[in-house]
Every structure is written in C-alpha cells, then in structure tokens.
Amino acid sequence: MGNFDGVHLGHQAVIDLARQPDAPLGIITFEPHPREFFAPDAPPFRLMNAEARTHRLEKLGVKRLYELPFTAALAGMEAEDFVAKVLVGGLGIAHVTVGADFCFGKGRKGTVDTLRRMGADLGFGVTIAKLVALDGTEISSTAIRTALAEGRPRDAAHMLGHWHRIEGAVQHGDKRGKGLGFPTANMGVGGLHLPKLGVYAVKVDILTGPHKGTHNGAASLGVRPMFGENQPNLETYIFDFGDDLYGQHLSVALVDYLRPEMKFDGLDALVAQMNADCDRARAILAGL
Image (tube, rainbow, N blue to C red):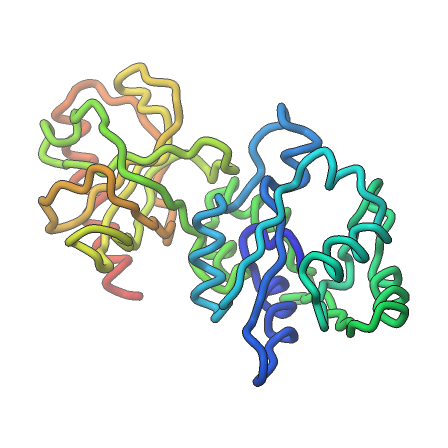
C-alpha cells in the first residue's frame, strides 16, 4: 500500500516484500494523489499519471490494483476507521506491506505502529519495508524530480530502476514538424512534474494500434519559442517511421538530455540543428 509515484526502487522494495507464492500480488493506492487533493493549485509534482503507474505496476507482476478514490470523506477518515472499514471491512486484507515512512488517515496520524497494533487486534499481518538508499543517499521521489529538473535523466533512471517515461495519447498539433521533414507525435504533459525543457534522445513504446512496438527517436519537451507558443508539450520524432499515430497511446522514455530549447534565425538553421540532434540521439541510443 502506498502512493507509488514513479514506482522507484524504494517502491519496488515494498512490492518485492509483498510477493507470496500462494496469493496474487495486489496494490492499494490512491487517485488522485493525496498531495493533489490537499493542494490542487500547487505546481504539478507527479512523476507519473495513473495510466503510466498502472503500466509500470503491471510490468512488476501486479495482478490486482485497487485505486481508492481520494475524496473528502477518505481524507477526513481517522486512521483506525480506515483500517477497520476500508482495509478489513472493504477489502478483507490478510496481510499488508508498506514502507517504513508510510502515514495515513486524518492528519496523517496513522503510522506503521498503528498498522501493527490494529493488525494484532483485527487479525491481519503487517510487513514493513526498510527505506532504500543508493550510494549512501535515500531514494525518494523528491530526489528524482530534482534530477529530472536539472536535465539528468540517467541519474533519475538510476533511482527509478527504469527510464522516466511520459505516457499519453497522441494529439493533433499544428503539423509544422511534418512540413519541415520531421513529423512528430504530440502529447500533453499537464499535471506532471516537468523535466528540464529541451531536446532528448528517447525510446518510444507504441502501446496501442497496429504499430505496437519499440522505436528510437528524439523529442522536444517545451514551449516552442521559435513559434511563439507557451503551453508545454512533448513532440516526439520517431526515426524511420512514417505512419499515423493520432489517438494511439505512447510511452516515451527520456534517455539523455541533448540541449536546451533555442530560438533560431530562420527555418534553415532550425532544420540543421534538428538533423544534428537526431544524429546525436541515434548514436546515443545505438550504444545502449
């Protein structure tokens, strides 16, 4: 049980401890993230949307996912009531695994000690996963956000245990890239913590439609200063691919940061830089 934003190595340690040979692996999480509920106007912080989290958990062998709606009623529920009414009365748990810093219930008053005490009273087991450190530093979603904001996707991947990915449906754009010889798949990034704006070497998984598979590419994350746009989005150019992906779902993994966004003197200079970006991205991805 937890929020599992990013599903990093610390989260994976919790999940690994929960594995049992005679029971399906289940996850209890919350949607929206409690932090979103309590501070809806704060800057976006999530590393993953719910869809991306589900895909990552599936890859880890999760068979049952319980996304509890985080409403005012749940937020105001005392910790003891949450355990008795939701975990035991609603879900009928026999055993629960959480991280050592897990808190829950009204005012975050419920702790791992609360779970242990109530488990003894109500007849369910409790396992506490130790916090995970890497190179002497505790792994946290905050540290991962910092690495991404500084343009260090490989450092983020080191803590995540996988590439940081942006997932979503391909949207119709202004088709400028196609006119320049670089047709892109455009995706929104609303609600997500933004990595450093700029150009990346990427791995692209096409998740739906007739073109399912993994491809290499280059992507621009930003506001397109060359064209006066100001709403951040992700534009991905998939190498050696020319098919229509509108409405299909993509998972774009940020592998390496190539350069910041730039404004060019003209389209010829822009195209020359895009060619150079693609050449560099191809070389990086070929070496993985």
